[in-house]
Image (cartoon, rainbow, N blue to C red; front, side, top):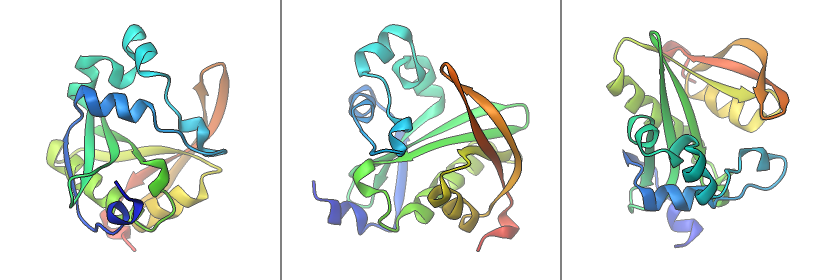
Length: 169
């Protein structure tokens, strides 16, 4: 798998996140300061039933994102709240910063609209992650709130961003 063939793709498809891809996802490692997004080991995630380590949560909430060549390039989470679908998403670390984020986010939003027509769509992003914030704004998200959220033993400051399709840049 080469980065260039993965990065050249302009279209994405979403499919169920199967256990093999989930295990691969748990091994992705981001460089600081993005290492905050690294997952626990696959074994720990399964033992503790964390996120996509729990088969039921994985089936209901997670999807694999593939490029036009069928390569696994990212994941999406669709967490249903009352009248809102909250997105979680991540691009493979070696593909970050290569200009594919906008189309990646748009594909995930399209799937959220398909899964929950009529629901609002939002996401949370760390306030320091300006690269992601710019991409989300281009995709039609606006900052609607800022607050602290528990993250393990610490708290982190996040923006809540809501999707407003009329704001697509």
